[in-house]
Image (cartoon, rainbow, N blue to C red; front, side):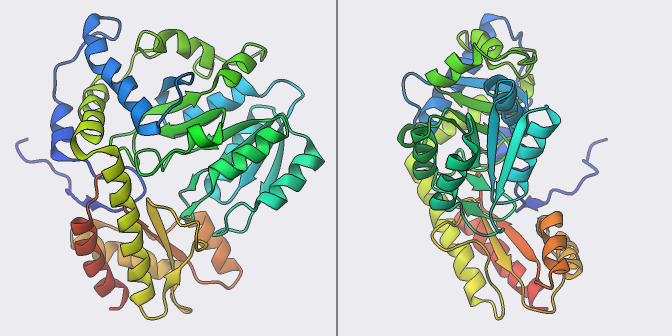
Amino acid sequence: MSDAPFSDLKLFITGPTYLRPEVRAAGAWPEYGHRDTENAKRFRPIFEDLRKIAALPDDYKTILFLGSGSTAMEAALRSLVAEGETVLHVSVGAFGDLWHKMSVENGKKAVLLSFEPGRAIDPAVLEAALVEHKPAVVAITHNETSTGVANDVTTLSRCIKAHGALALVDGVSLLGGAPSQIATSGCDMYCSATQKSLGLHAGFGIGFVSPAAIDKARHVTARGHATDILSHLERAEKFQTQSTPNGALGNQMFVQLEYIVHGEGIEARFARHAAMREMAVNFLRDLPGFEPFAQEGFRSPTVTTGVVPQGMTFVDLKAVKEVMRQRGYLFDPGYAKLNEDLESQGRPPVFRISHMGDITPAMLEGYLGELRRALLR
């Protein structure tokens, strides 16, 4: 078949994300053996570039998990929460809730501290929970993809560690779009993935682990196989993955991370994301009846959420999605469970504007122009 039977939509959703043509093309590069010297030609630069993008301290280690951000998050729980220990999950949305669910499903003694969707973690409330529950491990979200809230990981992790607990961070939708804060926070495992702000296909979970986390894992039993960070570290020392990786994604990751570090530049990339956040927030403020959803001062640099006027429904947003599809875009009508909960409370739903990865301000401007017409039609 000469022509692809699929639509080439411009993705403005929170993952998968838009791929640059050069990244798409690299998927057709030659295959290779993952235990051969050819592997190191791709993966040594990958590991080195990830360290630079994350501004990783010298004594932290990098792991590539086969899977997604959820794989890295589950590995953190399996490898770092010992039997009988309490893990405190601090949630500001759906993916914080998901991490708690993983703990429960893995038989961990888990406590959930939830904040209202759209609000950031309050350090004083966290402090009280640390005193009450005395957890050995605390899991927080850096960038909550469902609500567009970005937490102050440095302040929160320092608070956690002052109580003698390990700090785990979900940075799945932030890495590559803003500073990770790993060095300033001292967090013990930072989890991310390829398919969001790094501008790649899904296929790898990413973990950055501290010396304290590595030492803790040595004292935790039943770490599993694919979720055992110590097993992964043995291979990572050789710039390898524990099991056979997606070779096409490895080729694409090599190209994309070299571009981020040596082409666009890390600081320029972060500045572009911050500028697009301002574009999206201003867009919402200029729309009659619309407003930003996430708490001011804690708005994500990679995804912006907007509250619709009273009377507009989630069903209406789904109809907007189809209008935008006809215009060549994939629109995000919002996280379904969040919108169902909001509407059950008599509150208007929320939609998302993704501006992560390799979306440019010019691309975002064109999208927002079409979206304005679709929302006000």
